[in-house]
Length: 393
Image: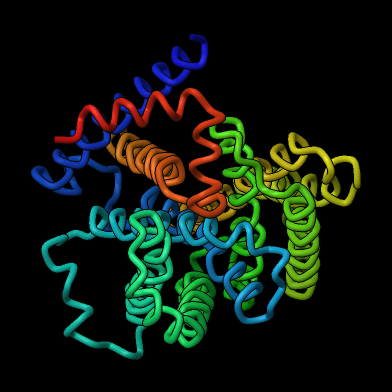
């Protein structure tokens, strides 16, 4: 009974946030950006662009895990391939949705497909996102085919799987770093605490830590709901990799700031330095130290806590780069409008609902046989299946 009440509560919250997001998006499309956002010609990129950076980053586990298992044959990570692909697939679909919402003329979203500008970083990002989302849809297809026991297309997928994965890793690697390249053209505007010639490198390293942390975060929540845990030794190993990625990131960033002579600015109190110190201390340094402690890595709750810290730090870094660091030059403080916030909350809720629903009814955590066995041991899932069967004609 308590479990059903909790499900009803979260379902109610999700319904409210999704409904509010749909209404806010409708107002944005009918009234325009000027009437519904706090964006301007002086500050054209805000919360939505920062959310896009976040979404692409936490989806990085897709190419990281796929490359590790299928290209470098680290088969111990095989159990998290499907969760990683699903995370990336849902993440990229949401990123595309936000990009369309953020466009001043959303009806022109198709222009980059036919109006090429190969000298633009944005052109490269657009095509990489489109191509990688296509690759992810094909990589996710075996899950659907397995669910409905369709075997014929599997032969074709096996033939093209290796080159497909290679292309996916290339596309994802290119645009993960290219998001940092977008800000290389504004050295006089982006605050020196975030601007760096190494921004593409820093973006790439941090997205690896964030993507793997998202897998740990999701696996903990899914385990609590479906009783289908991932092997803990795999999650513990992921914790080690995250700690290494965070350490490399901090070393590169500190050395870069010291070389440019701006490291001391972090300790001269200002609006920007406060956000910078919070970002680095809470989101990078603290989880790195915790993940180096063996009892923390061996604890599922410890790993879960560290994953939250890394994701928060990553989100703060992307928002600081997109918003806080860009407020210095125009001497203008930007804060998103209520409708901007509602749209982001609605899209984030859509992502969680999509991941939970798909992972509940499709064999994401294990094979189809293991999936059915888990359902039989979990009354709440049987209850959901019964409701689903009644609702179908």
